Image 1 (cartoon, rainbow, N blue to C red):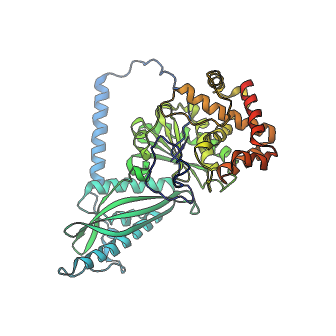
Image 2: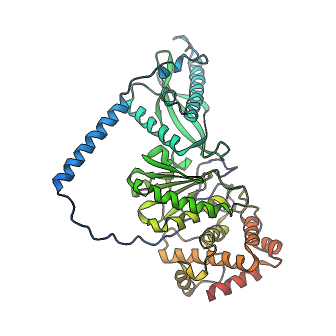
Length: 470
């Protein structure tokens, strides 16, 4: 499934169409699409529980763990200031505040300059791994903010920041006596310094503290920014490979190593299909707990969704951990990484009519080198066709409240169509056809004529016959 902006060239306008609609109507501005979804079988029932240790032993262990966590949080909250933090506001570029009786406009201009400087310095501190300098911007009296931002710093560093900038957008707004609010544009990406950056806007609050300003709040990005992003909102456990970065909810950290191994295999397949803007520097996977799944990226998800490629980003995928068995993880990530690889670059034809191409090629990737009879949704395709399929290979996306069987059947028809085109005309021509429609915005008939030498009606008839006989 593909989920919702910032692939290259996109900005992040507020969403103006319902979250259940994957593409804007043809008359709408070229806003990025909302999610597509991929299905996985329901997880098998858990094995019978064996008798465990007596309850008193569990209670004792839990008390010990709780005490350790409390002690750790207190240590983070009250750790002493270092010399580096104390020197933060004594840097040469810092400017003294205006006179107490200076006009409000002068104070606001000064606050804007200082916030801009501090945001830039904090970004540099993150990129260079200087935690003290990163935290020095914060209100020293707010222990909770200090702990949360230390968590964010550590997670971002572990994930391998390739680019990170923070820029105050516009002017500051007065929120109280010598207190201000500023929107900050963040661009970031994980991987090499050449990675393609994602963009979002977050709110920040500031106040005067003696002769300088300090951050008093860093908001999480909202739904209009496809947020919050996982690293804003949750404790994460991180592992990195040569092509992927995997971060799991702390509730699912036992899955980390297996998910990383599956991700590396999936990336090797997706890389071979990156024909337009090249593969990403890293594929990024977030594995969500049930609670996180309903919060991260601000999506309203249908019950049949198991994974999302967040196409408001260049390379981020989120997995619905509780419904995806480990055995299915490689298959799901191959599907989602193929979205990352095949949707990079311009998307002039990414509209509702292209759903079957986008999902069909992602399903195709999971079946490269395998016979059609091995496809796990083949029975769902038969049921979908038997229930009155109209014979058009260009099936529409499943409805938000579609049954698992109907949704799976539509995915299966999309897969069979892409597989048939690859078998008849070759994979290279199939990919060329995909690109001319999805990236270049050609009609199905124009793309078929240019690539296959016959009109779409001829191709469509061939595909429909193959699907009915599959």
